[in-house]
Length: 455
Image 1 (tube, rainbow, N blue to C red):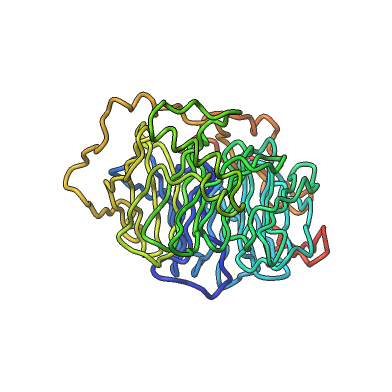
Image 2 (cartoon, rainbow, N blue to C red):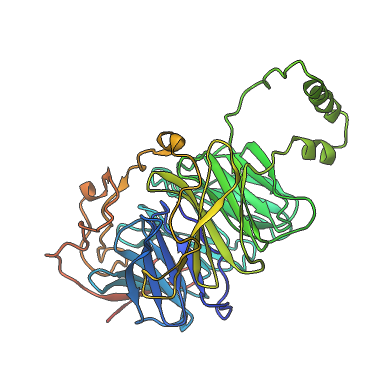
């Protein structure tokens, strides 16, 4: 699962960090700066370990890591049309692809790699980097807004279908066909995100007041949440928890909202025979006769929990992750800090800030908000949230020169078998005995195969 800052055109570098993204299962954080990029492990609250850092490519504005592997994809302002794929542990470049215009965002799972330009989306097979499909003539998408399901068994893709409304196009990354369009919002889209299973899709418009969740691939509305009513905001990130029980949204305000996705039932439970219960029934009945906008507002659910930031107006991303067997809210901001909060999964309420890390130091540099790490939540509920980590592939695909791949050979199919995440990256690629070759692929608009240049 991935939670990432909205793609931005080259030239817009803000504050200390130009980009930052959590990997697909929220176990790693990648940041890009004027000097290069860094990767951090998120396995501990107290310790922020730097897994890798590189200054070979300056002015990085996109950096994406494939789960906890050594595969990292980097795009620099110096060459905004070129995507570079690296094996950072070996210090080798796997391949690089050039496109017809600036790259705005990149998404990847264990089967597909998406490259989003302003008016087209390229879909690659990540196993050999062969270009499978180019979605051309999409509505202008200047922020590179798109989403890819991290569940490689479906690899659903979502992207805006209109310049003026919040229409979402749902695309099948396996069959390479459009599944449906979803009329999600009246205004244009600001954020979209799949849950880990690829069975739900969340969206928010540029107003940022209402967040909706739809079923996939049917496109039916399942939930509707109200972030606020007083002011419009810019949603900067939208992400499900790995178990799909919670949905988190951060914006340009000082509040991060967490919504709880309750189980859907065909009928509402019977209200207690109290005055408040009676009035609740009356309001529910009255909502059927009110204008649609008023009725919708009455039926929208509010935030289950909130995290308070000490700043507003800064670009940021959020995610929900289980660290040391407890649920945490993580927020990374463009000022170069990572904020970690405790989340009470039973009662919600205000999330408590327990740690602040600097992302610009040596990797383990920390700024403590408290002298000692004291869990602010009772340990009695730990068992209820200590769930085993979702299984995921421990290996990373290699690449063949068939169809434009660069280094190494095609990895055997068993290498893609699902298993535990390998945090220490024992399983490397390409295989040590492979014959490394290097090519450069130039993809022109409308040219599916591209041009190959030996290097």
